Image 1 (cartoon, rainbow over the protein chains, first blue to last red):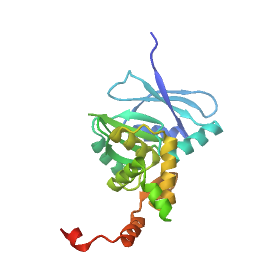
Image 2 (spheres, rainbow over the protein chains, first blue to last red):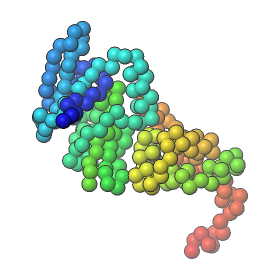
Image 3 (cartoon, rainbow over the protein chains, first blue to last red):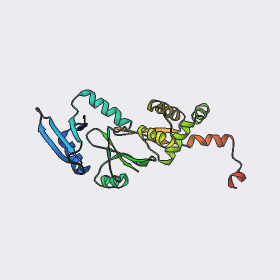
Image 4 (cartoon, each protein chain N blue to C red):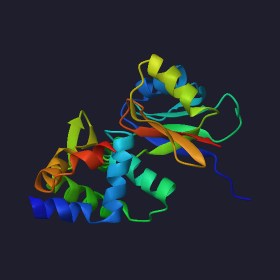
Length: 130
Length: 96
């Protein structure tokens, strides 16, 4: 049986990314292994699912990844999505922590979404299914 | 200018884009596409929506604003004034 164990986001600075994804978003660090050079195999998980899918905070060292990220951000397109219990409450909490949103909570029928800037070069969608 | 304005208004998808921007001014391309798909069942590609926005911008009905790395779209209804200036709305009827 094949399973998804990690999903990646490309980050411009792993230490900064770890701070943002833990201190602001609320994930917890799962794995941190030096990979040579400055790179680390650095993952975080949701405290609600500590043995669930890990989010790999992967260095965006390849020049093409920066180009792609810039193009996505300009059009407001999120790199990935996380589920939250209440987008409105999360938006208020994160805004209070200084997190910038490119899309305020928006009711789209079956789902409410918002889009934030992860400060590492990506936009991230938060979603609450109704 | 007139031709651009009426051309821009003569399309249901572009009118819906204006509706959504009136509901919330200052949206990314992604948000506009999401609203059209999820709220209106429109299946136009992102590319097609981008072209619709270009037509609206040409008519002066939409302006884009760069803020850092993001680009936001804003509605501007002021070109519509030319329509009622050209064909004034009867004041009595407008009051009723």
